[in-house]
Amino acid sequence: MEDVFDAVVVGAGLAGSTAAYCMAAAGLNVLVIERGSFPGAKNVTGGRLYAHSLEKVIPGFATEAPVQRSITRETLTFLTEHSAISVDIASDKLLEFPSYTVLRPEFDAWLAAKAEAAGAMIVSGIRVDEPVLREGKVVGVRCGEDTMEANVVVAADGVNSLTAQRAGLRQDLEPGEVATGVKCVIELSRKVIEERFNINERSGVARMFVGECTKGLPGGGFLYTNLDTVSLGLVVSSAALAASPHSLVELLEDFRQHPQLKELLEGGSVVEYSAHLVPEGGLKMVGTPVADGLLVVGDAAGLVLNTGYSVRGMDFAVASGEAAAKAVITASKTGDFSSVGLSSYVDDLKQSFVMKDLETFRKAPGFLGNRRIYEEYPGLIEEMLLGVFGVDGSPRTPMRKIVTGAVKDHGGAVRLGRDLLQGVKSI
Amino acid sequence: MRRASIEELLGTNKYEVDGGEPHIVIDKAACARCSPESCACVKACPAGLFKIVGGTIAFDYAGCLECGTCRLVCRQKGIRWDYPRGGFGVEYRYS
Image (cartoon, rainbow over all chains, first blue to last red; front, side):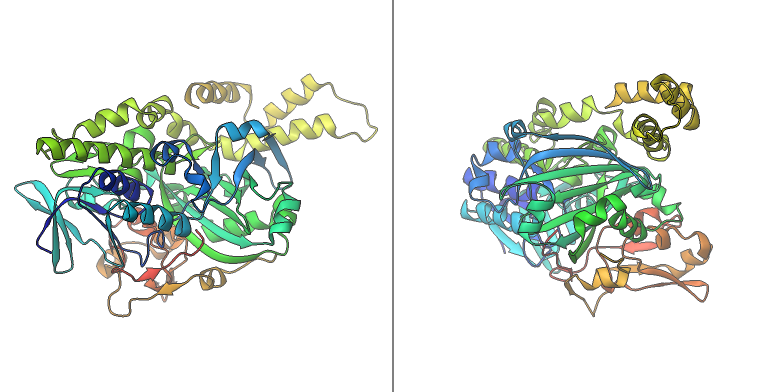
């Protein structure tokens, strides 16, 4: 190909396809290169897309997109070996903050098709080997023996961010700033899912788990209901995993066998097992997402927020893709594709929820590294609740004593006080 | 639902294995500097593809889930890592 594209997008995930959609809709000449055999073939999510940012780009998208279920119930569960202690909200009010469970192969294929319909060219089954640099400026990408030239390359190639690394913009990830996620998709009949989770034909549940499911390692579990499947998985600090005797597969299989989960999943069969890295460094790992001729979006830029009770990446990816597209559209008018000419991308991110939320929760990664959250506190809550609810005819203990006893057994009041204070400041 | 082994879990996936070009290559010299009991790759790979056989690391890229964990946790920086060539590797249908 001899032509110079206005933009080449590396990766047809949510960030890449959103960027391509917006740029193509503005009349730019856009090429998207996807290494999977179709858009979505390489992509993994825990399960839930917060709709707001895609709603802004494609209003009413959920009426035509392959979304699975609309979340009407949120549960955060502390797990011990025997118990599950939950904070749970089931409410129609959650529909005012729409979020949907999604499966990426079908969802990403849909979004890429929207970009294609808007005029972008999508090529699948081709791996971008490296960005092409000329005088320090990114001028295209190389795929095998072919070079595609572009005014701007949008690196939407996911968490490993090889394009930005090879352009010299990012260092490789540190094991301490990422988590490894695994997930199995479990097939159950639609009727069984709706009965067991007490939902109707379109509604769904999102569950987060803390404690026994990671055997005390920093991380957590998740469960999302899809139409005919349930997504169940774990996300564990990669650094902690490398130093632990536990393997992720053992942890996942133990999690699946937990007495509180087993009956929910009984009779189901695993139809897929996937793994993916999750950027969890928060604000610190974002760095500079712009260079001469290059914009970095979505996971590739580290745009993920984990607060412990919610994990968001896809809504950030969509918003960053849209912001990157705006910057390329602006630069195409001035003809300045340097980092200065593209800098409105960074300004846009700063003014949007993306950087504001990362800023608000900048201390969350440090707090969530505290092992007592996973090792001690689920057991503390269990001991208190068993003390309160367990009646066997022996003389009762007043609640005050139950609480002080449980606190003493699980690290003591000073530590708990300090951790609570840190939690209040962080999340 | 009974426990599944890693082989059974990987067996549910669809792969297009690239017979011609491994996308992950281990530097045996770097491996030799690591003690097999403490190899981070063995513990952290979610597909369990790094195994200790006869005191050295044996690795099979065919079941790779393409996450990147092994490259990051290797203390010897002994893993040359790339994505599989276009169209090859794991092909997710549900994730």
